Structures are given as C-alpha cells and as structure tokens.
Length: 120
Image (tube, rainbow, N blue to C red; front, side, top):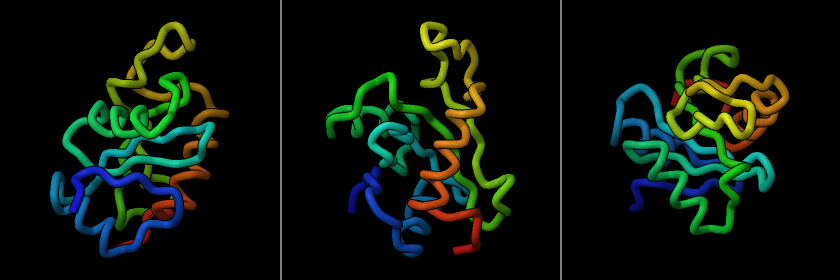
C-alpha cells in the first residue's frame, strides 16, 4: 500500500480512511493538478505528493496544495493552505491559494475525487 495515492477517479472510502488515519487522524494532505484534474492524497508533506504528480507528468504551475477534512461539511472540508502554494511568480505570495477561480477548480476536483466532507 502506497503512502501517497494518485486519484483519477473517486477514491474508495476505505482507502481515504487509511490515508487519513496513517498520517494525521483527522485530515489528509492533497495536491491537486488543476489542468489534468487529478490529485495526489497522502504523505507527511505536500511536497512529497507534489513530487509524485510531477513524476506522473504534471507541470509545477498546475499544482496546488490543500488539506482535506472528512467528517466536516462542504464549506469547511478543504483548507487551501500549503507551503508549495507560495508562488509570487503566479501572483500567489502566501501559503493560501488566493485566486477564487483556482479555489473553485480545486473544490470541484476535490468534491469529485474525495468527497464533500462526508464522514468515512
């Protein structure tokens, strides 16, 4: 079983539960490729999942980090914060994804591939 899983379709609840419990207990770190509409879930650092997606063919500029919290609600299940998001060259000078259009795409992908904060 891999510590980081690339999701191209909806992840099974049991696999998501395993990743949540493996590292943090209440959430899983994710990196979303907003162009390819895939994400990598798991690992201790967003940078680890970022490397998995880069090796899979993603481009750095398309990758954004976040945290996913199951057992919450759709408005609070995604935290748009990660060190890998600090990109002044892309008009994102902070750890938080500031562009609302990018956040909207991230939200759509996360809702499709992980869920809307449902309990596992």
